[in-house]
Amino acid sequence: MKKDNTYNDEFLDALADKLLEKCSQPEWHVRRSDEFVNNLSGIIAFKENEEERMMGEMSKLMTLMVMYEQKGQKDKALLMQEKINIIDDKLNNR
Image (tube, rainbow, N blue to C red; front, side, top):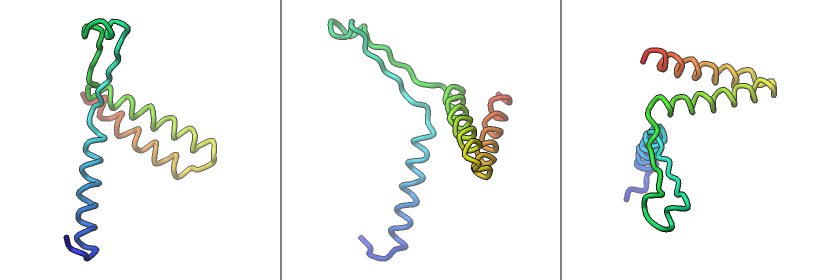
């Protein structure tokens, strides 16, 4: 393994890109009911579709935007609004 910072920076950039890619993918949701104890029919699992994932992200951004507005952090609130607009455009063009 190289000891210079260039190799480490490249590795960290690649790792960060991979993590961001994973985080932007739809999420699996799993719940086991009481029936699961007796048999496997009590398991419920589904994966978010892209629209559901974007709606969840937009909800998070809206919450952050309001929080930043209340704290008087206008720059952060404007950034959240820009991100909300991008997602809204994507949802409306589907």
